[in-house]
Each structure stands twice: as structure tokens, then as C-alpha cells.
Image 1 (cartoon, rainbow, N blue to C red):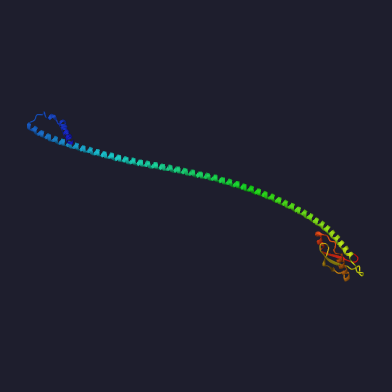
Image 2 (cartoon, rainbow, N blue to C red):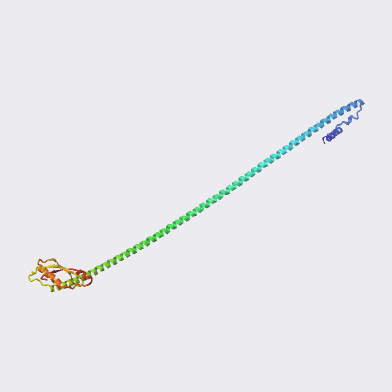
Amino acid sequence: MLAVLLHVLIVVFLVFGFDWSKIHKPATPNANVVQAHTVDAKQLDQAKEKERAIEREKQRKEALKRKQAEEKKRQQLEQKRIAKQKAERQKQEAERKRQAQLKKEREAKEAKRKAEEKRLAVVEAKRKAEAKRKAEAEAKRKAELEKKRKAELEARRKAEAKRKAEAAAQAERERALQEQLAAEQNSREIDRYVAVIKQQIERNWLKPGQAGKELSCIVQVRLIPGGDVVPGGVSIVSSSGNPAFDRSVETAVYKAAPLQVPSGPLFESFRTLRLKFKPSS
């Protein structure tokens, strides 16, 4: 292809660069031949020079083209690198934004969770405070009811104790009165029986003829129910100083037996009986 192109250029140069006016100038044959040879050599050198120039231009263009291609390729690679860096930066920025969004969401979620925990803590604290208040109020109410119940029980107990004390005092007064009445009645009965017994003994008493009116003795008689005298149960506990007088009293007691004594509990006052005798009685 280069050879064909070179020949075409030579032909064009010869056709258009040749001075045709020189052909029509008269010249001698030798001169024309020398001149023709000189022209042909010069033209050939010019054609070669042009061919070389064309080749150089071609090489220059090809080098420029290669350089442009390389530059374009470099630019494309640079653009790709820049695009890749841009894409990487965009990817990193997108990842950063995504992470920032995730962080924001996590922080929002954590803040929401903490707010909910705080709200629940406040609700729980309020619930506990209300429960505590209710428990304290209930405890206070129960304590007041218990205090009131105890006070009522204590009042009833005191009233009952007072009533019982009054009843016991009344019963004691009545018992004492009854005992007093019974004692008085028993005393009267005892006095009556003692008088009867004494009269019974005196009816059987043979007083010594020489007994003075100033004489007296106290005899102790031990009796069993029914009025019989315990054997050996008569003794002088306070002598008159006159043995005959004392023995006459003892004899009268034995002779009067059985003595008239009461039955039942009243007899206990007659188990051991002391009687005073004197001639003037």
C-alpha cells in the first residue's frame, strides 16, 4: 500500500509539478538531453524527498495518532479510575450515610427504649407509691380499727370487770349480810342452846351446902352429835378453888347427858363447849 501510494504521489508530482513550457523552448539536442537528465534526477530527488516527507508526516501522524490513542486510552483509564474512585466514594458515602442512618435509627430506637423505660419506671414508681400509700392507708385504717376494737374490748372488759366487781361486792355484801344474819341467828341459837344446856346441867347439879356465892368455875365439855359426853370429856379449865364445888359441876354434866344440842353444821360449835357455873347463877 505504501509503495502504491508513493508511486501515485510521484506521478502527480510529475504531472502537476513539471514545467511544460520548457518542452517548447528550442534547444540543442545535447543540451536537452543533459537538461532532461538533470531535471529527471532533481525531480526524482524531490519526489523522494516528498516521499520521505510524506513518510515522515505519515509517521508523525501515526505517532500523533498513537499518542492521541494512548492519551485517549490514558484519559479513558483516568476517567475510569476517576469514575471508579467516584463510584467508590459514592459507595463509601452511601455506606457512611447508611451507617449514619442506621446509627441514627439505633440512637432513636435506644432513645425511644430509654424513654419507654423511663416512662415505665415513672409508671412503676407511681404504682408503687400508690400501692404504698394505699397499704399505709389500709394499715392505718386497720390500726385504727384494731385500736378502736381494743378500746371497745377494753371498755367492755372494764365495764364487765366493774360489773363483776360490783356484782361480787354486792354478792360479798349479801354474803356478809347473810353470814352476819346467820351468825347472829347461830349466835342466838347457840346462846339459846347453851342456856338450855346450862339449865339442863343445873337441874342435875347438887350444889355443895357450904359453897359460897363468890365461888365459880369454868368447865369444858366435849360432846358428840346427839349430845352425849365424850368419855373423860369433862374437865375444869378454871377452878373455883373448891374441889368439892368443881366435882359437883362435873357430876352434874355427866348426869344431865345427853345434852340438848343442835344438829347439822351448828353442832360444830358444841363439840367443845365451855360453861361457867357459880352458885348464884
